[in-house]
Length: 330
Image 1 (cartoon, one colour):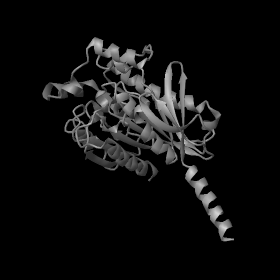
Image 2 (cartoon, helix red, strand yellow; image 1 turned 120 degrees about the vertical axis):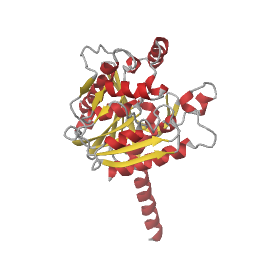
Image 3 (cartoon, rainbow, N blue to C red; image 1 turned 30 degrees about the vertical axis):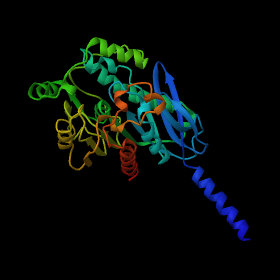
Image 4 (cartoon, rainbow, N blue to C red; image 1 turned 90 degrees about the vertical axis):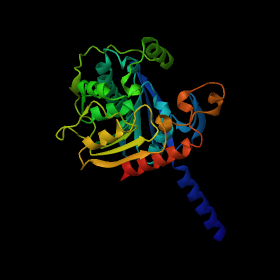
């Protein structure tokens, strides 16, 4: 009898422990590439996702249930795969994470900057629509609250999709008054098109004229998390901001979006009743990116993969992921 109970308990433990798995699918339609992470019961396998070693249940069925959505927006010229550890943690916690690969980032810093910024919000909506065309997801998605997570330039995308305005004149005044070169200086032509070539994206037509001060129709009505945010050029009006709560995390050694110029002033314009948490954490601008595989860093110099001496990126990222899971689940 005791032996029977032992094996029953063992099998129950195995089924429970094996139930936590993150499914992953990479989708593409009309040149828009997206990544989708979601709860699954299938066994995870070790694979490669570009320069990252990952463990997902690739193309696995979705676990039965109903799940809220987190739309994720990467930084300037980044990729959704950069945030695979965070997306996996959120999928393990019971969310469907949908992330487009923004295709017009190489136009940021040109006369088409605001077209490119607006297009990012369009891509976010298109990514959700693409997922809704798949029966497995459409039948399980809870659209009553749409959450969002953005990194660096992706924070502008998320705020714009949650009712914030974008105003170039604010950026111009900031750059005239302050020494903020990594934010204010525009990349040269060769740099921008080199980035486009490496990313392998097709430039969208961007036919719509977008003024230098504009609002997009809000599509995000849940919780918003902004990591290493941009804080200049953002206009917040109480009647327009559709986000339920806002979580802001900057990094003390961020030389790209310096907290004094970005995370801190952004936290001051978010309505107090909506600002859930604001922190400046240990780390640098790339601290939110998953660690790159050693097989890659051994043969290639990748600036975003380099950490200062003594900084434990994996530990820092785990702490951030734990905080994000608690925030979105709360």
